[in-house]
Figure (cartoon, rainbow, N blue to C red):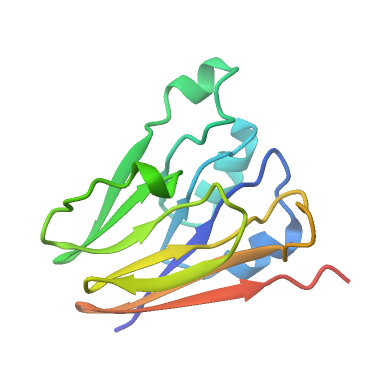
Length: 155
């Protein structure tokens, strides 16, 4: 049975209906930081259990102080490490970490480093420069993980 983990980051207070639609049907959700306002977390929790980290812009409100800077989501024997900024990922990760989810750059990206999938779902919030508006998905089957980046249709 394949488990779907939806990935979203850098909403900066804007949760687009297209992003919500793309994430519906997921078993779990991860928000990679720069949330912008707590209502976004409530809307995501209505879809699936949510793992969330604080971004560098999530500093002004009391709700943000309750959000950790790093988190780990465990699905069976597989662990997914989450932090907002790629440079904050520890040099040595626990051996069960198969995926690292980040945000911050607004650039969707996935690459494998030393057997670990690093994925940034890009930004689902306000457009920055000419970067696409995107979310991501992890498809997990046991210890096998496949990442997917999804550009949202805003037309």
